[in-house]
Image 1 (tube, rainbow, N blue to C red):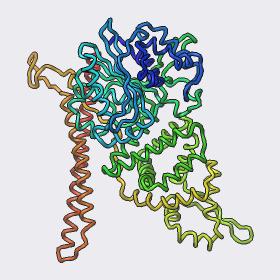
Image 2 (cartoon, one colour):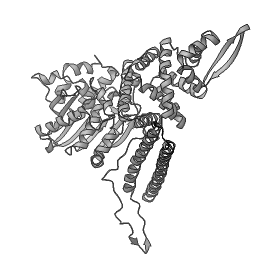
Image 3 (tube, rainbow, N blue to C red):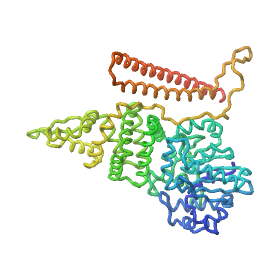
Length: 580
């Protein structure tokens, strides 16, 4: 591939500022040099009208970097397309060609205003409408511009990266795919297209900023490299700026020189923790509830976009709106309940998520995490006023607080009788003293509505322990050519085929999930038995035994899967040692 990731990254920044109008008028630009000579890019080169989450220095350097590269400047612009098809969200894409080398670049803009929701819909379907639109346009462009005669690279940032990967999996005409902070795909996509992914993922590159929040979404495919995000916060975006494509650039000077600073340790631990937590939570839900959870996460991201600095009051207002929204009212308690159970089984997760929030400039959300952790581990410590200025210190544990708040009507009467209505006020004050977070009466009202659902969800949640991205072995991976059972030098040879083991592990993972679901269905059926006959006790006992036996089979399958995984790791470690 003649075009480097640096050249493609420059183009991925430019497309955000390309106006549709330029391609509607008769004076549309013929080359990239024509494009950056127009008024919009001239303003950017002068540091004027700079978009949010970037600086004038960024754009001065970026335009200069493009001008310094004759290969980019001479690219011929064949088409600029806007997705206004059915279900489209207005995302732009371009076809550029280098006639001297017969290379083509198909470039997809990142998430347009009307495309964010489609990103989250993709968490529970194999194909989204906007992915299918992108593929249809790409195939039309291939035919229109005879791209089969070119070496084709598809590339994009954010949703553009996702579209690029989708097209690469679906269409053999793509020779290279380079994604920048593009999100991944649902478990359903991984299942439906596992064969295509195995065949095509070796030509996919992912280049991600270390603290970007979009590349975390769902299962990624292809090889991934992480880079240190630059100038985070200088453009006023804080957390949001991590996703701006300009954050890749480490400017060396004021003349467009730059480099990309790789992270030697790959993805930061706190980002991986957040990724695995959300994967785990989504996998614990049935389809319909998963859709609602994805909608709530979408709303949370939109809340993040509306807040460009720490503003605890607005954060609490947004969370309160979610509690009062019929669509997200059910999901928010489940997410909190799941976090509680997940934290108890994975004690490091709370620390890592807090670290993630701090590094992302969201200290206000850290305060909310502090409240959850305090209630979980210490409860709420308050003092009860007694006659003659005496005070009794008491600690309300998490379970007691759930009971207290979950019985809102009764507790208010009890509170008025025992302390003159001061217990809940003291809880509010204790939270404020510990975290600085001043909860309003409206906030408490929302919590009072939510806590009973949290308690109910906690009783039925089973944590999905594997929240890592699904991986599909590549069909192009090499394997030993020596057949099993052959001999050499009079010694019997033993061969381990890692591809077979990985395939079996994938099968076991699906089997464990099916067994788990079957056990829950059997248990649920037993709980629904309401009729009374002489055989009812025996039927209930048999149902309970069946659920228990199914659970034992699930446990043994997990153990066998663990043994195979250990064999695979030992084999790969030994193979690396032998091969140096």
